[in-house]
Amino acid sequence: MSREKGVIEIRISGSGEGVYEYEFICKASDFKNPELGEPGFCNDIHVKVVANKTDSEIAVDIETKTFAELSCDICLAPLKKEAAGTYRVFFVFGEPEGNIEEQEENYRVLDRNASVIDLTEDVRETLLLSKPLKTVCTENPECSMYREDDAEHSEEKHGAKSPWQESLEKLKNKYH
Ligand SMILES: [Zn+2]
Image 1 (spheres, protein in one colour):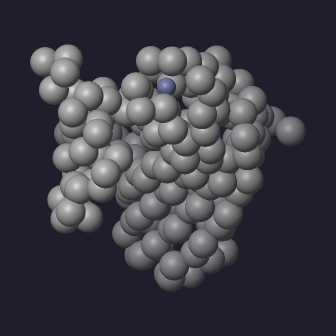
Image 2 (cartoon, protein in one colour):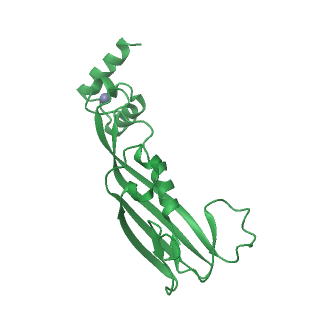
Image 3 (cartoon, protein in one colour):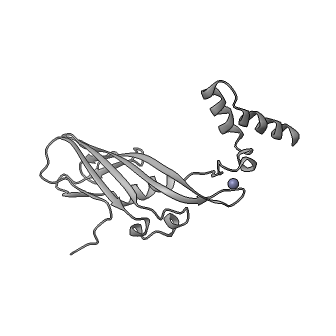
């Protein structure tokens, strides 16, 4: 083998124009990247790749889904949260010296004779971006108090306030 095989690779040689779907199940440890271990990506990671191949380019949609093992920001109780990410990247057939260098970073030049596309780095990025920024547990009302934005949204959705929400608001007012 002349080079290391990527964790996520799609084979494109010999396939004509059309839409191709690929599914992978991998582990964060496959990526050999310490950043992915930190947010608790220790469960199986499901990756779905949809490649839309045309005469001039391949548009690749990446979807990642996993359950991140996190802890509540306030009480530190362990909690599991679904982390889902999406990313789109375009591989344009052409010469490396082509004039698309001014384009956005999700445009890449692809050799027309390439047989595989290595998506390892793109999947890694997608996963990192899917990491929940704030994690607060829902079971503990004392923690949920800090989720004001979320509470407002669920009120809109349900219309009427539940007794639980009312007591929550009383609690909130007490501290204001
Ligand atoms: Zn909590």
